[in-house]
Amino acid sequence: MLLPLAVVLAVLATSGWITRTESPAPGTWTAELQGWQRHALAGVPLADADAPPQEIAQFFGTLGHRKQLLLAERFPLVVGNLDGAPAEVRYAANRHALLRARAQERERMRDERLSPAGQHEAGRRMHRFDSLLRDDRQILAFDPHGRGRAAEVFGDLDLARRISVVVPGVDTDLLTFERTRLKYRAPSGMAEALHEEQQATRTAGNTAVIAWADYTSPRGVGVAAATGDLAKEGAERLADTVRGLPGESTVALFCHSYGSVVCGLSAERLPGRVTDIAVSGSPGMRVSHAGELGTDARVWAARAGNDWVGDLPHLAVGPLGHGIDPVHPSFGARRLGAGPTGGHAGYFVPGSDSLRNFARIGVGDLDALRWDADMAYCAPEGPMGRSVWNTRHIPAERRTHVSVGAYDDSHG
Image (cartoon, one colour):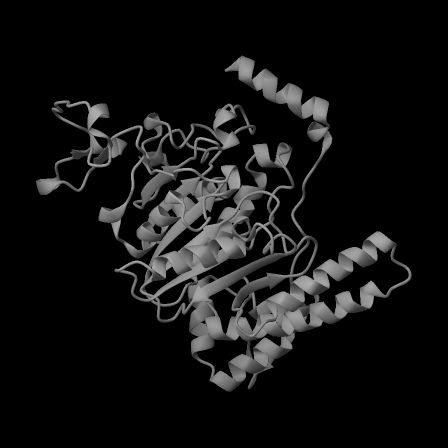
């Protein structure tokens, strides 16, 4: 253990990462929140913005549609980020917030007090906000402060029978939320591809997918990415998002890279409607076994052979490192085939085995999954509760017949 730890520390020190610090972006509400706290409707104070999603949902349920939209227009940054508020109202609020943010960045583009680099950055943000304002976009969360945060919905959240949430990793912010080139390496493109793949399956029904980049992620593969500090804050936000989803649809999480750390720390806070947690390119989930996550959800793991994360030392010493490799048999996750991908960021590229597998998990079609060809898997849902070793996707020449006596299926 000490040798790989020494190597990691040496790399961090010599590259300058050890001296860098990351801090979460400043609060999203500040000014608006003060107004929200002082405001009242017909003499009745508004709900506490820090209230649990269930209380927020109950509060909005007492309001007519007109009053809901009035609050969205008056306090867009508050309402647009209130987990538990109706999705349609949040979309409207975030549209107001985006219009204001775009106007501010347009002014900053012409502000002579800014350097040319600052004006250029303002222009990039203005164009990003302009894209998010397209009529076909459904923005569930938006925070323009600092590097910014966002979440987008594909499909109809209110009608969905199944909801999938894509949780991305490092270097995720407003400017990287979507891309024209390498579209499916950005959160919005990942979620769009997953939704389209789900809709193409025979058992899809009504589904919705959320591109959830509503947390402050680490910048680069530095100290912040090697620790769980930012993931802890993200885990709380993720749990609130899931608890605030409408209806009674089941939920599956698809967590990429550092996003799997967020999902690991969030697992025990998630409601029972979460049936599946699938990680890809994961550096670890900060536990030594899937059974320690504190959830009844099925845990899946996938990694492509050309993903550099496989070369990292999967360890945890103090605050450094995220623990056991989720694709290692000892972790107890169900190992999925990823097939050839574009490396660490290629798991959601259309046509990939990983995306097909994720889509089938999202729609509940587990019989159609493609498993990792390097290992059999154990499905604990066999007849009469017995575990069943399944080798149907393993080439015949690579199969090994085993006899299994008493088997503890808590290990996956």
